Length: 404
Image (cartoon, rainbow, N blue to C red; front, side, top):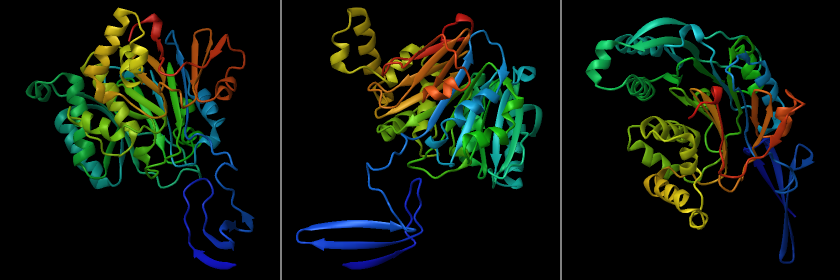
């Protein structure tokens, strides 16, 4: 038996290894590798359950009645083991009724110099109605926080006229300008009457950190992160947001590079190397710029297979063929389940093979969406209806029976 000392071995995942000894045993042509970690044998693949990565949850009141964010914290906390403390966050709609006509910019700053440079840019392009630190509470679970500020703004009429852009496109371009050109500044929320709150930590701790229970809105989404390709960073936590659109995502899309290169041709800047950022920009592009409905968007990003389309009735087949051909670069492949928040509603969508879990429940005027049924039952045990949507079939809920 040969013993090889492996000092300072770092292993990604829920059980980090700081030091172990590898015992390599040879017996004829067979060999056995066994890791001893802190006196315990590390289990091999298949011997331990690793959750399918990330947790998502959402709730919406179809009448627009506002509710506290406390329920959303409680829901996402049930799925604690789906994340690893490297990111958590929330999106909340209807929380700024007194400033509903202004864009609420939420920003992270690495330094006061970055804040000064960014505020000079904002003053040059916007009328700043109000600015302040975003209220937080000190808790031991959340550390190394950046400067976190909030600005309620509206584009300056002269700047908007000179740009020859509409108000939303002007604001979106300013967001990309800050995020790509001002070092140490990052706009992570930019919609009207909504806001994103995220950090490095478990989601329930992030909710307490931001005092989410003090906000009231008609829709909340939440995310617990288990990053697989990128490090945990405050800006990289979910939700990802642009203008009124926000996305929380469980999964890992295999079409990331194709989607990224395609969306950047239309002026978007992907700076964080994460697939959820790309999904957010695809949603914005298809809905705001191409004027597709959310039902049509679902048929683009989770398109049916060609052999399925061939069997559809003529009118339905013609529509799906058109969408697949015209927006082929926006097809998302790989496992995913997403919640998309927007002005006036919420959409849940699985990949077309349903490789990630998604459950939807209803109670009176409330609709719940989550990775696990337990996350819904903890806040509403007596549901009127509960089901698991099929792969590629969206669940779209709009305020007061509206269309999206």
